[in-house]
Amino acid sequence: MGRLPMIVDERLTTYIDSLNWNIPEYLKEVEKEALEHEVPIIRRSMQSLLCFLLRTRKPKAVLEIGTAIGFSGMLISECIDEGAVIDTIEKVPMRLKEAKNNFKKYQKMDRIHLYEGDAAKVLQELAEAGKRYDFVFLDAAKGQYLNFLPFVLALLNVEGMLVTDNVLQDGDIIQSRFAVTRRDRTIHGRMREYLYTLTHSENLDTVILPVGDGVALSVYKN
Image (cartoon, rainbow, N blue to C red; front, side, top):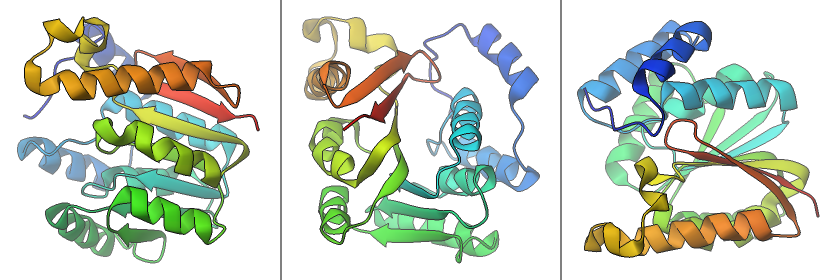
């Protein structure tokens, strides 16, 4: 199984998941297959948090950056109102193929609109087209989060929420850059800068939680 190390005690996480993890059977099958093939998808604690946020905020338009195989996009579709818009962005050809197959298999083609291409370019095009979203889920290349942020803010409605996944890097974020492997130092530095930007921006109200591999919840104030 392709599970990664946890930043919170795994026994505690397993116990919490046993209390509130509840997704449709077809998504459990997609998750099982993804883990068997070591395809990264959002962890169960993050699944529960994401659905809770969506159910309580009731967004009319959701943007996902990083479709992967379509798991989280389909999960989002289960947690929002039937008439809400879901747009998602992916550029990796193999992932695009898998996502399309899953959307077709589980009858999500009419519910989820898949944009193909580099996220920064697609985000810019969406902003220029006047698109606006109440909720953005960012789960893409971690080294690019800071580059995506200006476009995301241009797309967010006031009081809209940005949810950024995988921000604590299995706990490595607290290490000195010299304590992480050389190949990870650039991403380590960029993620630290991204988190500093989120927490010190006058336009955002942000909290960082040790859920899954770390999640930042930001509300756009201006």
